[in-house]
Image (cartoon, rainbow, N blue to C red; front, side, top):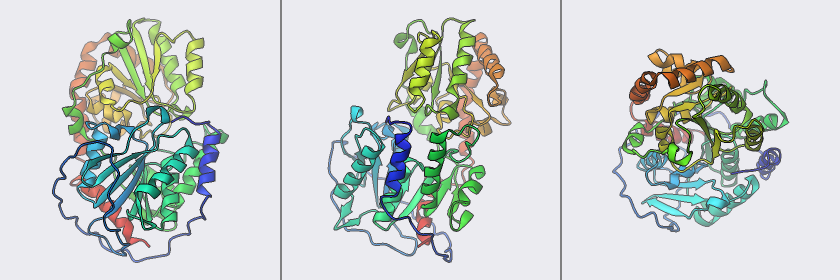
Length: 449
């Protein structure tokens, strides 16, 4: 979804103040967690467009409910791909809740239809062009499909980021007097060294959304203190749960992109996948690739994603005469085939990057070279592959490592063979089942009034 870099930020601010500010939560006594009963698998149904049939409206509970209705707001268009790991993850969540209604921010040019993908799971695309349009579309969808007798059928609203999806979720939770669970997966509030007016305003929006959440989930302990400072009851309202990667789902999908066919002349393809923002420092990646191309003309780089810096990056690449070596594509429904077809995944992020591109690349058995700020850096620490983690901004380190990969096929073959085992070992860090943990955290939100 594209939007003006300045107006997009102001759009979020306007939306946030369309309803009164949520008041701080009063002190409560925290009840002990309860075990979640196991659920029977849900049978798959046809993905034909349907409108949901409303069951009885769930009532608000002051204790942990046995089954909850969830309104989940996300921008993961991959959910429309029936073979994507993201859809498999949502279907697992659905086995542990009563209903799961998913609002997906989608662009008008890639319009989708409403789908019912299981007996209790619905996908609703916004098909919009811009932040305000997405908000209004989501608001209309919720009113038409998720409200019964002026009451929201779900009793919990969840957002997967504190930006646009978080703004929509905060508004919806306030409007229908529901609890708001926020996932805070990357660094949003520590960009002072890079901050322009747009970045500063984005951080302000993030702070407003976080402060309105009933409970916040972060993926690492280093985010916990930052988020806790914005909440009335501090760390009591924050929980840590590492981001889950469905390694098994990625292993069963063997589709591979043929870059030699799509980009003739490229024999060694580097792939980047992230938001196209200054924090990702893609300008550095362009400089690195230019150095590499001076020695190996058949090297190319594909940048997957969208963001405020896209046009600037395209213009710079054209001025440098690199437009026959560096290419752009929008985020596809399935990233795994791109990772499998690539020779290398590259990330030059300057701040903590939880977009998970590098983690997914490992799961797809693709070698990675990343900065120490990337979310995959702690995974590689203590392994033979820690050498492929470079300090932030270290052009020489990146160039040296890429040239080594090109010159020594044995190095990248070793990394490729063992990459999925490295990421699979990370998944062992979960105490029990990730899906149970997540739904438990959703249910724990009901401990707060």
